Structures are given as C-alpha cells and as structure tokens.
Length: 482
Image 1 (cartoon, rainbow, N blue to C red):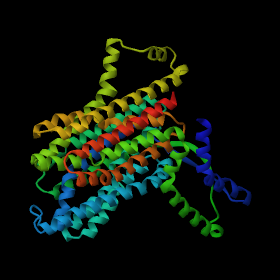
Image 2 (cartoon, one colour):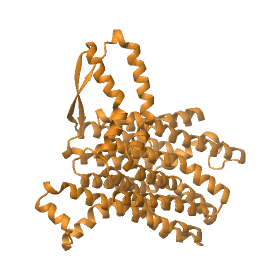
Image 3 (cartoon, one colour):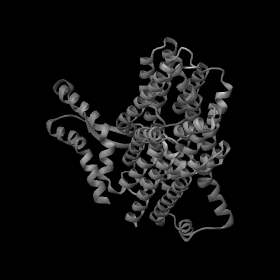
Image 4 (tube, helix red, strand yellow):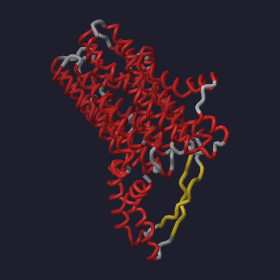
C-alpha cells in the first residue's frame, strides 16, 4: 500500500516539485509559506454550519423550482400545455448546469482548501447566496438566462461540495474514530435541517420571503465561520517566487495548466490509490441510485396516489428525520449503551490500558466498523426498494420510506472506510467526493430515463440493483483488505 500511495503522490506532485526545486539553480529567491489548519479542539465548531446551511437550503428547496414556473408560465399555478414543456426543460437544464459546475469546481477547491481549510466553506456560502440573489433578479425580470447564470453559482455550492468542504476540515483530526464521528454527526445535522423543509415552507408567505430568510442564514453562517472557527499556522513549506519581470509568461502558462489539471486531479488520485478504488466505485453506484431516487418517488406517488406537494414534502421530511436519528444513534446512543451495560471488546479494553501502543489496532477496528455499517445500511435499501412497486395504498409509502431512509447514512460510512485505508487522506477525500458528484450527475440520466421508458415502479427495482452493485464493491474491498 505504501508503495502505491507514494507513487501516486510522486506522480501527481511531480510538477509541483519541479517548479519548487528546479528554479533554485537559477537564483530565484526561496520563500517560506505556512499552511493554515483549524486546531483539533475547534474542529467541532464547524458542525454548526452543516445544520445552518441545510436549513437555508431547505427554505429554498421548493421555492427555487417554483421560481422557474414563475419565469416560464403566465400563471405559475396553472401552466398551460405548451408552457409545461418549457418549464420542465428549464428545470432539467438548470439541474444539469449545477451538477456539471459542481464537478468542475471540486478540483480547484481542493487546492484552495490545502492552504486554508476555511476557504472552501467561505466560497460555498458566498456562491450559494449569490445564486439566490441572481435567481431573485431573474424572477423580477422574467429572464431564464439570468436564472441559468444563477444556477452556475449554485453548482459551485451543491450539497456534495458542502459535505466535501466539511470533510476536508474533519480529516485534519488525528483520531480516525473522531473523524468518523464528525462525519456522521455532520450528515445527521444536515438531515435535521432538510427535515424542516415542509415546516419552513408552511410559514413563509411567498418565495421571496424564503430567499430573504436563506440569505440571512447564509450571512450569519459566514460571520460565524469568520469569528468562531479560528485557524492557526500549520506546516511550513519551502516554495519559490519567480521573478515576475523575467518569467511572467511561463508563470501564467503554468498556472493555467495547473488549474486545468486540478479539475481531473481527484480522479487521477483515485486511480493511483488502488485501495480507494472500490469504495469510490461503491459511492458512484450508490449515489447514482440515490440522487434522483426521491424525485422519482415523488413522481410515482403523485401519479399513482395523487399526492400533493405538501404530502411529498412530508415524505422527504420523514426520510431525513429517520436518517438523522439513525446516524445519531450509531455514533452516540449505541456507544453509550455499550459502555453502560459493560459490553466492551478486548480491543477496546486494551486501548484503555495502553492507548498509544494500540493506535493501529484501533484504526483497524474503526475501519471494520465502517465497512460493516456501510454494508448493513445499503442492504436495508437493497431489500426495501423493490417493495415500493408492491404498494397499493398511499399511506403505506410512509413506513416504507422510513425503512429506506436507514440506508441514506451509507455515504458517511463508505467515505470513512475509504479514508481509513490510505495515508494520503485529504486527497482521497476529494476523490471520493468526485465519485459522489459523478453519481449525482448520472442519476437523473439513469433513473429518469428508466422511469420515463418503463413507467410504474420498475425504477425502484433499478435503483435496488445499483445499490446491490455498490454492496458487492464494498464486499470486494473488504476481502482485498483482509
């Protein structure tokens, strides 16, 4: 593993090292630069942003889509037949723009986060707020082009990029168990915020009010990040500064090339880090089954059971709430119960006796725990999803969705497991986020096309098969590790 990982780092970092060492022979002045880090004792403060950001996103979840109806339809509550096509097409194009921009932004974000871990979150908050402002202007001016421009900024601030920016901070902690706990808690808080969406929507008189509320939350989140999440100097790196008057063209060309390479760098890292390939594949397959799962579910319930927007909203709220409770139970309630009843393994006892000498054992135990939890979570969905096809009454969908929601925690476990396998953890976090984003891009194409062609509930059988393939990838990774 070491040879593979170091080879990957050397290959990807070759250009950086060449830029840093070769000029030293030409009299270029060295310059010391310090990477910034968030101290371990303050990392937990970032968790608040997972909640605040999701609440702001929940406030605009339904109203953003409705805004496109306002732009494309004369009467947004009753779009005509010829307007419905334009409305659906606008939403589809906007979704594609956001997903594509999210993938393109990941690589450059990785470079920015390396020097300052808060940079990614700052960029995310500003981009998301900007997208709301532009969309509001687009609604006033009835301009679909402006709405698409706003969607570009929303693409720079997708939920996948939010999770990546948070994970890039959590990975700095020295304890693998704490990283897993932070990642799970972060996703749980995010789910709590999303579960509030129907409640928030019911209290807001119109979508402009939801925009104002979201902007206020993003502004407060930005202030919180600047004031209450400190950074400190980390590693000191020796770099070089080119003589601008003599090397301006070469420097500019190098920067442009570096920016282009940074877009696909996470995929290259994944290919060179062999132990992370299968967890990455599992994330790709799983998110392909999930990103469009609930939109397809809402289409299914609307057609077959005449669900209203409010009922579909509570369906999403149920799923998010159950997933949040499941994550909090796994990372907090279950360990407390284990400790209370005295159910401790030999490994846990040995850690208490000699924690320093047993760090490697603890990491192995944590890795095994994440693998098992990921497989169990996905197995629940794998079994439950086809039953959507068998539902005969509308009320039956709610308990079934609650069961399906237990699998929504799987990405947290998969990412924690994948990171535990390698040494270049920060790079692999970006690679796994890239695979997750690619799954989000493929999901509407795969599930949406399948639903439009097959009709009925066969789309959920297709989603189940993708989850099954993800389970096989994780099982194969576990066998290779063993």
